[in-house]
Amino acid sequence: SKRNSVDIFLKAAGYLDCAIQNVIPRLPPDV
Image (cartoon, rainbow, N blue to C red; front, side, top):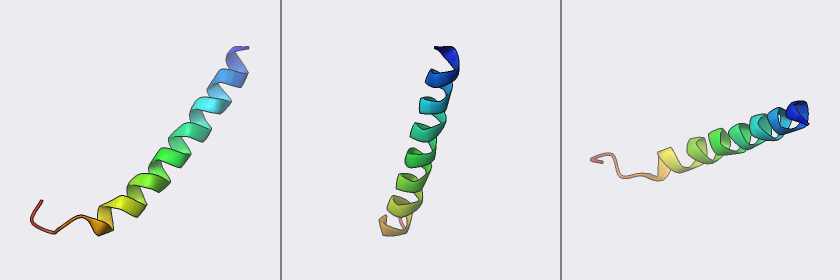
């Protein structure tokens, strides 16, 4: 169903956002 796919998309976006927040501080400052 469309609603279920939207819920999955929002969860995926949330996980991606968390992953980005975890990765950014580890990047060298000159990048």
